[in-house]
Length: 562
Ligand code: F6P
View (cartoon, helix red, strand yellow):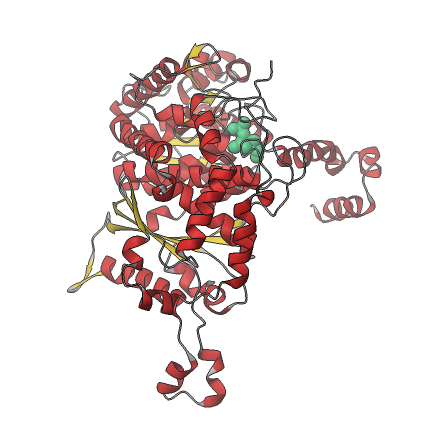
C-alpha cells in the first residue's frame, strides 16, 4: 500500500515569502563593502556553528530581511513537517513509494526506530557488526586468498553512489588508512578502467568488493565479470589454482565479496551470500556511503574510524533535526541556494575545497545534488513552478585559481561558491621557516576577500595603471561566498560535511516540491544503450532501426573500429 506523505507539495511561488523575496531581490543593490562598513558585527552575526563546522555566511548577498524572509519561506512550504516525516520513516520518496532513512544508518543503536513494522535500528546494527567483523578479518590478515596470503589491495567495483562516496571518503581519510592496505576503485565500463586498475596487481593478495544496490547495473556487473576473468586467468598463470570449476569457485569465494540490497542476484553471480553485506531500499544510492556500501572504506580505515565517521553524520543530523531554523546551517545554506537560483539567476554553484584530501568531494556532490534535484515535476506529478537544480562543480584550491577563477571574479554570471578548509593539515610541511598550510589558507582568505570586495577603478588607477587598462583590471566584488572551516579532516568532520550537503539538498528539494530521492532521469539512456548495443556489434536490422543521426554515428564507429 502506498503510504502517502501527509500533504502534497506547497507551490512555493504562491507563498507570501516568495512574493516578498521577488520584491527584495528587485530592490537589492548588493554592497558588501557598504554592508560590512555599516555593520561591524556582520561577520559575527552571520557566522554559525554546526557540530565542528564553523560556517560564515556573511559574504553572501544577503540582508537581515532577506534572511528572515527565506526562513519564512521555509515555514510556508512546511519544511519542518517534511523533515520530521523523513526522520520518522514516512514514504517521502513518493515515486518509488519508499522511506528515506539514510539518517537511520548513523543513529545510536540504543534508540529503536520502527518503520513499516520493523525495528530498523537493530537491522542496521547487525549489518554494521558484520561489516566490522569482516573489516577486522581483512585488516588482521585472518582473511586470506587462495594461497593463504593476506589481502593487500581491495578493488571496489561500483558506479554512482556505489563508487563516488567510497572513493571520495577514502581519499579524504587517506591518513587513517592502515599501512600496507591499498584500495582502488573501478567504475567506468570503459575497459581501460579494469585493465589499468588490475595491471600491476598480485591476484593472490587482491580482494574485489562488488558494490551495487540493485546488483543489476550494466557497468558494475560487466566490470565484475572482467575482474573475475582476470582473477581466474592470473591465478591459473601463477599456479595458484587449478583451471577447473572447483579452482574457480574457490577463487571467487576467497577473492570476491559483495554489497547489495539484492542478495539473490549476488548468489547468482557466484558470490556466497555469507560473503555479502546488505542494506535496504530506504537508502538511496547517493546517500549510501555510510551503509555497507562503505565496506571498502571500513576495511581501509578500520571500524573505530568508521564509527567516528557515522558519529559525525549523526551530529549534523541532530543539528538539522533540532536547531531553530534561523540558526540551522543546512536550512540556511539550502535557502540561500534557493535565493541564488530563483531570485538572483544563478545557474551553477562552485564547491572549492582548500584541502587536497577533498579533491573528489565536488564530484561526489555532483551526484548528490544533481541526481537529487535535477527534476521538472513535483512529487505529486505536476510540473515544477520555478527553476530547480543548479549545476554543482568545483576543484580543489589552489588549482582552480589557476584555471577557472577568472570567470568567477570577472565573468558575467553570479556563481555562489562554498570555500571549505580545515585548520590542521594532515601533513604540516614547512618550506624553510614558512608553514605551507598557512600559505595555502592565505589563498582561501584572499580569494573570498577579492570576490566580496573587489577592486574599484579608483583603486586600480591609484596603482598607476594606464587609463586604457583600468576597466580590464577592475573587480566588481559582490560575488557571494560561504566559508566553512573545521579543526581538521577527521572522520567525524567528514561525516558532518557530507550530512550537511545531504540536508542542504533536501531543503532545496522541499522548497521546489520535488522528490529528491528518485532518479528516473537516468533510466532512458540505460535502456537505449541496451537496445543500441546489437547495432554497434554489427546487427544490421538493429542499425536500421536507429534514427539517421545515431545510425550514421554507429556506422562511422564501425568503420573506424579496427
Ligand atoms: O545512475 C543511476 C543509479 O541508480 C544511481 O542512483 C546509483 O547510485 C547508481 O546508478 C548505481 O546503482 P547500483 O548501486 O544499483 O549499481
